[in-house]
Length: 287
Image (cartoon, rainbow, N blue to C red; front, side):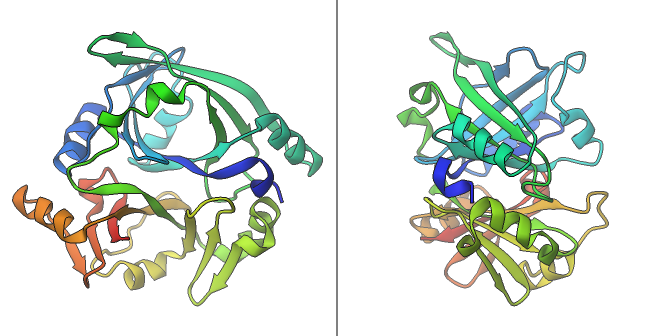
């Protein structure tokens, strides 16, 4: 097991957007408080982040197609949507050594910087990244990161959202046969973390409350009534993101006031459509 020793759950989820500014306005309409825009140094990409107290969502888009986009341009040829998972590390050198000891190739440690455009001037958050072979988390594009300047990214005015969302609960991936990936995930997350149930596999991340759920395309109707499976180019993709909210009635009231279409599932969940959240199903779950 690699995860419990040096990694601590989901740091953030990435959503690839075809039009970054359009995505920003769309997520603001959904009731999120977004950070100012960040421009990645050396790449042709920029982002807006939706910060929660312990994790966040990153809306990522291309702002300069003449520069390297770190693969985002190729991803968007197949449509926008969930791009990947960033796991939070505490010792990426040790993570790299553990992965190499299991025969995996690693890339890094790399330092990423971005220019954050504040009203008071530009600041430069820094991150350390570790990338590894796709076989480590098959079907899920992932990497590990460490924040070197968390005080810049987590600011009080950015973590409170009008829609009441408070953090990431679960991310759901569709893949042809989740059972084929169990051994890989057990090696990375630990055997006790991987739970096989009726119709899905769940990974309960050590050292956090985050859950990754793996389902098939056919199971989308069962878990998300009203959403029809689509003929997608991608065999594996991020289908849904579930967020915690402290007061589901207040969240529903916000959506009513701002005419955000949502599907109500009992008294515990509200669900938005893919088209309103840049290609992913966005669910709000009562805590």
